[in-house]
Amino acid sequence: MSVINTNISAIKAMNASTSASKMQSTVMERLSTGKRINGSKDDAAGLAIATSMTSSIKGMSQGIRNANDGISLAQTADGALSEVTNMLQRVRELSVQSSSGTYQDSDRAAMQSEVTALTEQIGDVLSQTEFNGNALFSTTSGTDVTFDIQTGANSGESITLTSTGIDGTKIDASALDVSTAAAAATTIDNVDAALAGVNSTRASLGAGQNRLESAINTLTNNVTNLSDARSRIEDADYSSETTQMAKAQILSQASTAMLAQANQSQQSVLSLLR
Image (tube, rainbow, N blue to C red; front, top):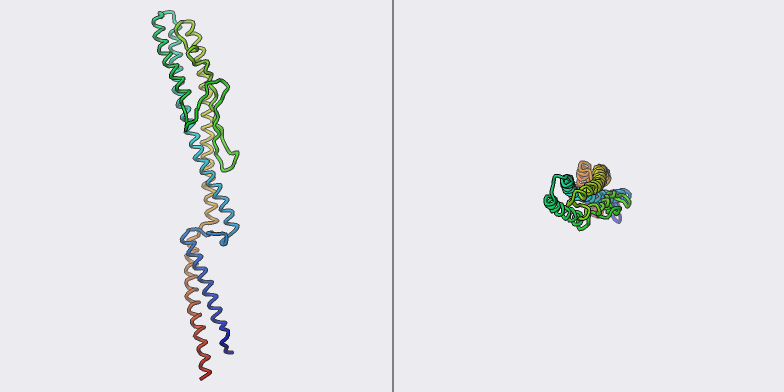
């Protein structure tokens, strides 16, 4: 039966052409962005999962940067304490020297002059050493300086660096005195106590630094694995997409040709009127 009001063949060809055009547009978007999911219409569940993964990846990447900053802080503090240790050891050496009865008061005065300079320098190092404007040390025994380093993507995932308080009474001018043999003997004990405090602080910072390095290794592995998982969800498979592009182009050309053929078939009805 020949009809002219409804050209079913043309309608079907037009629908096929529209479908092929949409497929071609989708594939072109995927190839140009490199992503299979470019909006919720592509895969709503996959988009939600990929977005959550992205948040975690960015959080962990920042955690890695934070941990590296924490390591730099610990290294700055340890470097300062290393200098303090060297100076305290020199004070102890002078104290032992002054304790000997073979030296005169004039000799001890010269030793005391050096000790005084070292004492001032130790105080300057402990009071002035900072990291990004934050003081690193306390010279009050029992008063710790703590730094919470956020090392994870979620709250509570942190590592605390602790700079234990150094007893300032063991390293001030009155504690480090070698002007007499008796005072020098006391100074030896004070220096030993101060060195013990410094060593304790360095050990604490060293342990924190090791934890941060371990956290960086773990976070780096997690970021790598999570990035790989996200890629499998949202990234485009170029081999598959190029195949789909070829298919869409062929279907578009075929449907356009069939639409023209269907419209042309309507013209044959006119022959019945001649």
